[in-house]
Image (tube, rainbow, N blue to C red):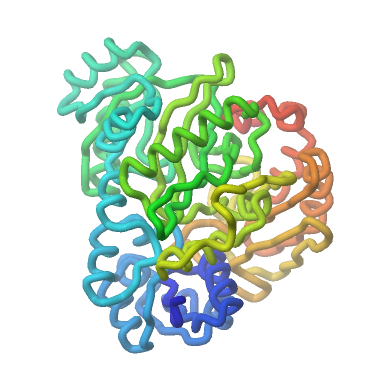
Length: 445
């Protein structure tokens, strides 16, 4: 097993990885920016290294500073968490070239899945359903207009190198396409350094369902159930639950089998997620993208399958067998995760500030993965995620009832936060029925 681990991330995910590492007797090393010096993950690590100023380009995305910290502390492995450098193939190659263990999929898999057009084509070749769309980038506006006419409106205009719900626009006709194409292309060039754009069929009433996969050290790929991720704002997730209330036993078999084929197509190792769009009217699903890293919402899978995904990641990276029997995976119960963000609960605009009060809920079936505590400052330099409130129960109904109590008990004063939104959602008839889709937040507003 790995003996020392540097966590190249911050906030709640760094804290969560450190917790598992220390439980396993692994020396946990944190890196941090000047802005994060007082956060809990820094204090809880066995060792912490300052790697730069608040600007993430000069700290959490600074490859040289992170590798220097690993060398100075004698780290044996690097876990990238999610975001920042977690899906940077060049960083993964550099880590391994430096003689360190990379806790994640190999660089070739990251590269293969990092370009959405290449990923679509690979999945189609592997027999994974893909939505109607372009097999090559739309080189210019005329090509985009031609492709959209063939696919049929409405269409989604997507940055080929995008991710995390960024770099997307919907066009209902040619006039809208002309506007969205230029907008998405400019955004993609600015944010990802790659202006390649693909055109894909857009489904107005659709569900976002994903499958957790784990590529084992022996070469097998297993699927650890699905997660429902349709409660979103601006194409970014707010709530996830497992199992999905939209997935029947028959659909689950097909969905999980397709996710395994997706992983096998790129010889996947370690944790990853195959994201799909599900048409609730027909039961058809389509490959959306593969996230070659640990997901924010991994705790709901951990509960339903009774495993620690970070521990499994470390075992795979160490070349060891998993803690579970891959041939006897049995899900149980229901889990719901709510992303507590530093943003107002109506328009979801960021609201940084000093945390004056921080009181976490407790009780049976309640887990809080937090990145902050009382007295910390939420700065504008990073993602707005403050904590994840994970609620579990024997049934979905029990989990929702426990979630109501937990949300009511979660007190955060100082930065704006969206706790009030979850109180509203947990009384929403559409959500309670389980028959919701990605438009639910818009209909609530």
